[in-house]
Length: 110
Picture 1 (spheres, helix red, strand yellow):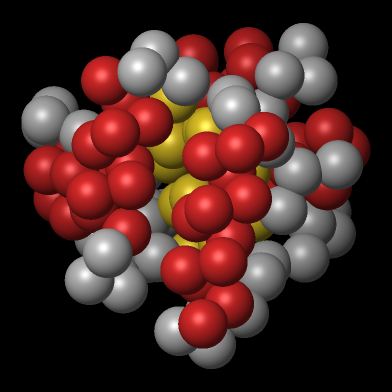
Picture 2 (cartoon, one colour; picture 1 turned 60 degrees about the vertical axis):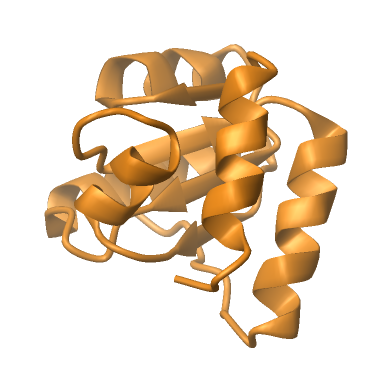
């Protein structure tokens, strides 16, 4: 996980512009309220596939970063397999970090 990413995710969480966990993330994407999806590298293949597909349907970029513990720790919660950023501005900032670090997006086929 890029070093500045946890700080950005924490700010996003405190601003109320981030949802985490399977159910909340799925609802946000189905309602087209997600602007960026981050999936933990140690999430199950089924979870990765499901959220990559939902992100593609919602038109949101999707990346695999860190572990469940990394994602959860960044937002002050227990391990999370998926987080969805609901703010265009925060998503833009996080995308900048990911691109600078050379993290490749996930495509949603399935």
